[in-house]
Structures are given as structure tokens and as C-alpha cells.
Amino acid sequence: MVTAENLAPVLQVDRLSYYIPLWRGYLVRQPAGALRILDSTSFELYSGEMLVLVGESGSGKSSLAKTILHLASPGFGRVMYRGQDLAQLRGESLRAVRRKLQLVFQDARAALNPIMPAREVLAEALAPGERIRPNERILELAELVEFSPALLSCTPGALSDEQCRRLGLARALAAEPEVIVYDAPVRPDADQAGLGMLRLLRSLQSSLSLSCLFLDRSPSPAYRYADRVGVMYAGRLIELAPQEELSRHPLHPYSQALLAATPGIRGLPGDKVLRLPGESPRPGNLPGGCRFHPRCRYVQPVCLEADAEWRQASPGHWVACHMV
Image (cartoon, rainbow, N blue to C red; front, side, top):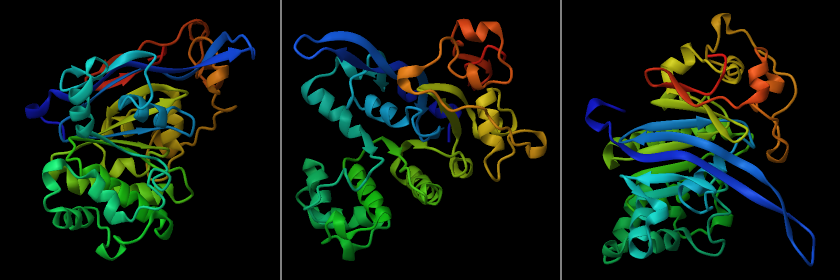
């Protein structure tokens, strides 16, 4: 939980963007624009905080996770860990910081070596000082994530999706990180799986001094455990606020529709369901101005001309909307 004692952010994401260049031609390649996957995203993650970012598939969550850890090179912007710009670090300094920032991938099974038993997966990830007692530490990690020791001899193919996710989390914890970035899976059982992992991560936060960035499609699990919740749309963070504030007073029209359509969350007075016309734009076909304006019921001429500025509408409540 964010308190007066931990106001210094552990992680700062400043105007982070990620573009995929497009080319034309075969023998002579020429630039042909770029796909805007992630665009000018800014937020902070505080010590001991559970920050949940939600958004439908294609909103840029997985690209955000990979760009934060520099698994994908940012086209613009900075990622700061404890005041250190990751882009300025090299060699051992970068490796040391990367151990403090760990990612649990969306497809946990694909992120594991298919022929390596779970025990070896964890042994490989241990810090050098812990390799003198690997068996003891491996059992400790399995217990932390509620992974049965009987499964340590199994390869990922013999594990369920849920067990692979827990093994992926145990591997991340082996590095003794300060920040866990958890990219929730896109599956029919995603909400239930996300709830279980949120509950587990929340229980680990106090004992391991973790800060968690949890990325999910649905806000439903987030509202039980999140300190703050952010909403992403078409590659941009459009609203961010404390959990209770966002559920009671969503400001962006997309946030209002998303929360009103989520069971158990009062997004608007009377739980009125707001049906949005059309579909989310694809990265290669983003509209000019505000990218939400083709679906917005409040659209004004200014929305067609310029994207909205990311600003603080009230203490702790950030939004990108011309009409707020």
C-alpha cells in the first residue's frame, strides 16, 4: 500500500513509446511508416504497491511489459529504476538491475524450457550465493508460490497452465526482485486465474517487500487487491487512479463503459451498461486526434484535431480526455 513513508517511486515510466518500423521493397528496402504499439505512456510504481493496468487485447499491455524490461527497445521515453535510467546502464550494472525487475510472461508455458524439469528451471535462476544450498532454496520457492514439491521433477508439458504460471513466478522470485511485472494470460479462465495470482502476489508483497505491476484484460479481479488501477486503450494509458476513486468516479468515457460492463463494479450510477459502437483501432490504423473519438458519445471538434494531454484531474487521478 502506498503510504507517506514510501512516496519515492521504485519504478518510473516516462512517456514510453514503442513503434515497429514498416518497410517496402525487396532488393532495396525503404521506410513505409511504423506501427504505433505503445504511445507516450507515463506512470510510477511505488514501494509495496499493487498497480493493475487493464485493457482489452491489443491495448499494448504485453508490449509495455517487455519495453519496461528492455526486452523490446523503446522508440522514445525512459524507464527509471530507483532513479537509474535503464537505457544508460551497461554490463554488470544492467544485469544487476534486471534481477530486481522480473517479468512473468503472458504465455508462461512457452517461456519455460520444454525439456527442463521444474527443479532445474528454478536451480538455473538462483542467485550465485544461493547455489551452495540449491535444494533447500528450490523447496522454499515452490512453497512460496504453492507449487507442489512432487511436481519438481516434471517438465512443462506435464504441468497445467496454472502450474506453469506458478513455476514462472517462482523462477522470477528466485532472483530476489523488488518489482514483479505479471502479464496475465488471455484465456477463457483468465479472470479466475488472475484472481488466484493476485491473491498470491498480494500475500507475498509484505513478506518479500515486493512491488507489483499486474497487467490484465478485465478489471474484475483487480478491484479486490489493487491499490491503484489504470486503463489502457489502443496503446496508451488513458486513466489512472486509486482503486476506490476509479470505481466511483471514472472520468474517461472508455473507462466508464468498461467498468459499467464489468460484473460487481459500479462504474456509473444505476450500473447502466454503455454499449460502444465500433471496435478498437489497430496499431496501423489509428485515427487522428484522440484515438477514442470514433466511439465516444461526447466527441467534439477538438477531439478530431489533437490527442488529449495526460494530466492530473484531481489529486492522484490522472486522465487523458479533452472533455474532463
